[in-house]
Length: 161
Image (tube, rainbow, N blue to C red; front, side, top):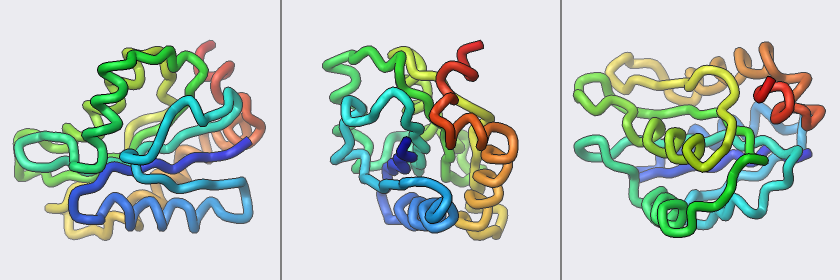
């Protein structure tokens, strides 16, 4: 079982958060980190788990590195019913489109059959908190609630029931 931490970023913040999440997971699981621009969901085994990290850019748009991934999902509409994932988004509540990037990606994955586990984590740039610290705390909560099933590769069956 592998945990894939995938990220969509414009300025590098989502990549830095990904690095923090990978560091927090190392030693407990096999972990990979990939930019969404280079990620193919077909590479994920059924018992694997995906953590999606994405910023929001402009007026609620996807960040540059997430756009090719989203376009492939739209064009190919793959069956993602074997994919289980959790989402962490970065944004700024000053804007009406707060965290739309992560929401757009998560909505698309669910539309294609993937199962989202746990509540979506969010970082608000207006909060003054460090995004990596917020993400690691969110991860601890996710693992506290679902960690045994994730680590055993049983998250898909459990999330569906």
